[in-house]
Image 1 (tube, rainbow, N blue to C red):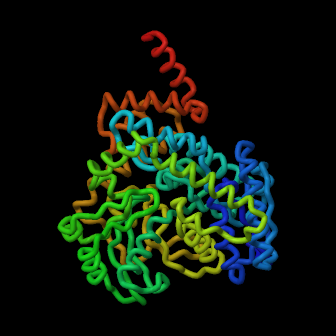
Image 2 (cartoon, rainbow, N blue to C red):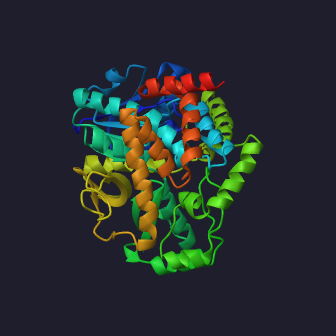
Length: 453
C-alpha cells in the first residue's frame, strides 16, 4: 500500500449512493490520499455511471483535491493493483427489488429486500457475483481489502468467509452508526462524542452500552428511550414506537430492522397496505432515484444533494470511508462491522460472520473487549437468522434447490413449508435471468408447471 497515493475501486459505481462516497473521500483527503478513484459498472448501468461520474469529477474539482476519477465497464482493468475495493451492486436493479418485495406480500408474507424471502433472493443473485469479484481480486490485487456494502451484507460476508480464498473482507452497514446518531440525539450531543457496544448479525444488531466521551451513559440513554416516542427508524422502515415494557425487559437497544421480528403483525399490515396502493419501498425508491439522477445531470451541481438522504443510506459513506482510513492509518477507530467470529461469540462457529463493534486497525477489525455474548432472550432468534444466513450462502454458492428451500422455510418471516415452497418456486421463475446456478432447477419447475397447466 503506497503512501504516495491510493487506488480505490467502487463496483456498482453508477449507484445513486456514489456521491456519498466521493464526499467522504474528499473530506478525508488529508489523511487518505486517493490518487485514483475508479467507478465500475455494467452495460445496463452505463448511463447512470456516466452521470454519477461527471458529478464526481465536478465535486473533486470544486474541492481542489488531486484525485483522478476513472469510469469503466471493465472490472479487471479497474481492479489491477487496487488498494481498496468497495462493492455496492444490485443484481437485477430495482426491478428485481420490486419483485423481492411484492411477490412475498402476494403470499401474505413480509416483503423486504434484505429480510425474509426478499433477502434470500437478493442473496441468491448477489453472492455468485461477489465471489467472482473476490476471485479476480486474488489475481489482480491480492493485498487489497474488500469492503462490501451490498445487501444482504451478513449473507454476503458469510459467503465470502466460507467460499472465497480472499479473506481480507469487511462488511459494512449504516444501521449501527444510525443507532449511534439516535443515542446522540436523545442526549442532545454531537455524534462525534458517542460510541456504542453493538453485537449480533447484520440487520439484527443490538446496542449493549453507550459511551459519551468514554463514560458509560447507557442507563441515561435507556431512560430517555423509555420516556420518548422511541420511534426512531430509517428512511426505508416504517417508524413504529416500541412498547416501553419490552425495551425495559430486554435491557438492550433494538435496531430498526428488529421491527420485522418483534412487531411482525404491525409491519405486515403496514406493508400490505402499501402493496395494495402500489407503494412498496422499491416503487418509492424508483421515484427517488429518478429525481436524484435528474439533479445529478445538472452541470451546475458540484456537491452531494440533500435529497440523497431520502434514499435510505444515510451515513453509510462515513462508515465505509472511515473503515478505509482507519486501516490505512492504523487509527483503531471503533465501528460495528461484519467480520469473522473467530471464537468471539460462543453461540457461533469460528467461520461465521457476525456484526460487532471493532477497533479497525491496519490488520483489519479487532472486536472490542467490552462487548459480551447476547442474553438468552435474543439467542434463539439470532441463531435462527444465522442458520438462514448459512443456508442462503450455501444455496447461492451451490445452486441446490433443497438448501434454498430450507433457507426459505427456516427464515422466521416465512416459517411455512408448503407456502414457502410455492414462494420459492415463484421467485425462482421470476428471477431466472439472474440465477444461472439454478438453471436446471428452474427448467424442471417450468416443465412441471406446463404439465399441470
